[in-house]
Image (spheres, rainbow, N blue to C red):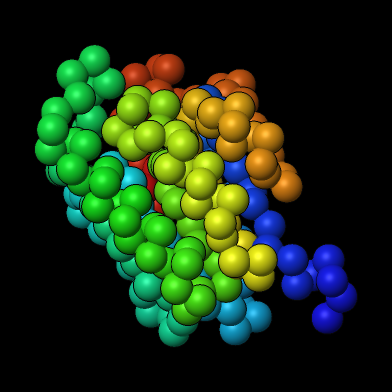
Length: 177
């Protein structure tokens, strides 16, 4: 294995377009196909299991931690419960990254949790700065902070060009969740 292959990378999937979580799950599937150990931590997604969780849970080497209330977080009315759930997510994320038990850790919607001040951005940057050298880390969500972008090895911005929501469509099972 070359040095470049063994170095753990930090990937950020951000932007206002669809596909951030989908891209991260694609990387998870690829990693699992190579026998890697994966931990996916969901921020702000406490509702019913998402399709990718149902499918991936049938594979070995993948663990999920899911926190958040069933209701959507209102960025104009952040509650103590919202912050508590985000804190639980971050604790699970920190434990997963630092444990040595996983090759890939995905922090789904962590960018927006930090942007909405559910968690302190400095806690996220500290986690990146202290992650083991061989752990790959993916951070998803809109509004990625410049501090995260600066630390990342790869940043992809999903840009919305057209979306069915604009014409009144609702979220579709198997496509949006």
